[in-house]
View 1 (tube, rainbow, N blue to C red):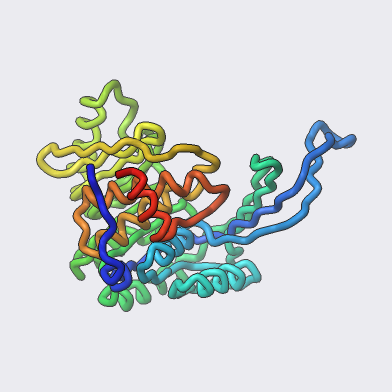
View 2 (tube, rainbow, N blue to C red):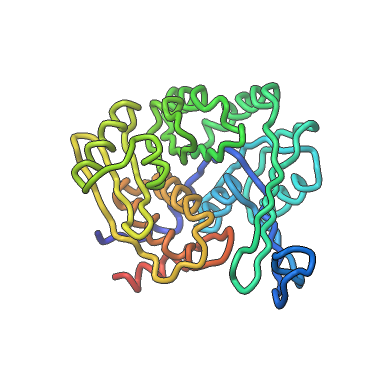
Length: 319
């Protein structure tokens, strides 16, 4: 499939509303030269640290980095991590709309990395209160008319408890809804425009398959059951498969040449898809662009983004 970037003006005019679970990704980089005398574990001597926006926040960053406009709606704590996260996002050009819950700890994922390898990850998280989540629906309704596409980024942290209501509101407003799903209960996503599970997430819901024919059968059955316009399965080294109405399926091979880190690759996929659709690109071509973008981001360490220039360069190389 030959794909090309839309005009920059179309990307710059495209507006995407991102809703979901956000987190602050912290990285501690260091060296390991010995084993601890206290326990059989490596001792990491930390030399520097980095902070990056993760989860739905990384989706929003990818949209802006590719040249589009992104508004991020989420619930966070009233703490240092939330202020750090908001500053990172605003510095990147993301429009931030956070609801703060003083009883909530903003999700933080701390990774210790040595020699390009992750030694350990420490997670600090809690679910937001239903009162704050209900208030977020009012913000969602106000933001809908100002955007072209809605992305719901579900990381299973409780931020999308009212996802069914959000889908119904977006449908009523005539806005396409793209969802990165989590868990095994996908009935709550019924009526969405597009779901983008990876193959393990799809297998958890649809069961294992033998061969492409059975995969297509299960994908189309699930798509019809949930009344989706399309279902896109990201399949790691097997590329991506898009299933649409009338049994239509489109497959693209993987673009990754060297993989350092797959964390955040799903964020890049759905961000690219959402932005391209908002810019008027047809879904199969948007998938091709998202596939190339994912091939770039997995070659980077940690939560990362892809720029419009990087994507354009990769497309020229591919062609």
